[in-house]
Length: 409
DNA sequence: ACTGTTTACCGCACACTACC
DNA sequence: GGTAGTGTGCGGTAAACAGT
Image (cartoon, rainbow, N blue to C red):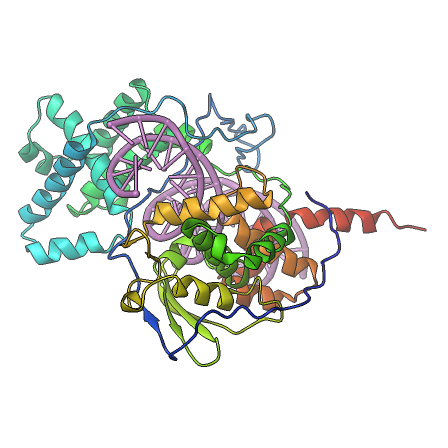
């Protein structure tokens, strides 16, 4: 996988429009709020290449070769935690601090709501801090009289590190506890000072993305697979059907999985589908994408959407978009993720590729076909198009450029 | 001194997965 | 199957460079 090949002409289009009775079917978004994942980065470096160049030198650079390539996946030694209690304590502490500042419950809640999905992570880290704090004989009250937050954080991080915290954990703790002081009104420089930055150098460096020209698989293998699956949709398991539908949407809309997860959909006339979602990454805004039938219906989102919806009973029509007809429940984010992975694997996509790689290869293919930069920016919805695209999407196109460079007199 | 370009750094949203 | 720990992508911003 890599290199270019010719794009198979997308040909025939058997009609497989499943029932599409009434215009305007409506499905609402599932989630109330998302509940996953945390920020911060990782790669458990056994001493990542932190290398600070001598003073007189230029810029520091952390990703010079030789850092152990394979970003290690979920380290085998996951810390064991008594999570529920911990998170609850964390949230309690957070709320307690705001109440000390006379924040009303509503106000406090709205502060929390300002974080979309990561709050569930912050509260865990704060909980971890709470343990540390209490264990060292301090009370919550003592927290409000802290004069020097940086010291508190530094000591906390240092102790985490000596207790073999992962880099990701160090980063997460720094962020969460810093936040705890930020809401007390401390200014940035009192929190994230020079000494703490020194401490954080290693974990932060370890998480930096290593840039390389990684080949992206061809979108075509996925499309081909979708096309095959479309032949016998009725034999597909519910999860496969789901996976195909989402893959198709992703390939043709370059939306992220999380965005698709919280999407809702309306069917307009003639198999035209309108998908609405909200973008949270970067600027927050709502987005509506309209899918019209493509010449190859077998890979087209419209036909996958209509057959997906057709799986449910009449009375479930208005249920959430990712409602699971068999189980009679709404899919979780993880379930969607698994569904797409099943499809990717079946298509022959190399294991280890993330769901968003579909987005990547879709954009890469467009570039390869000569899409203009404007088209790419519009499709990818990247703010700072050119640089982002250059770094993330056209990596395996460099071969072409190099080949051209070989031409000389 | 001023303008333009590249890259580091921060922090949050998103993705993956061990484990219960 | 879902939770929570761990890993990744990317926008905003400013520092470090580089040119005029």
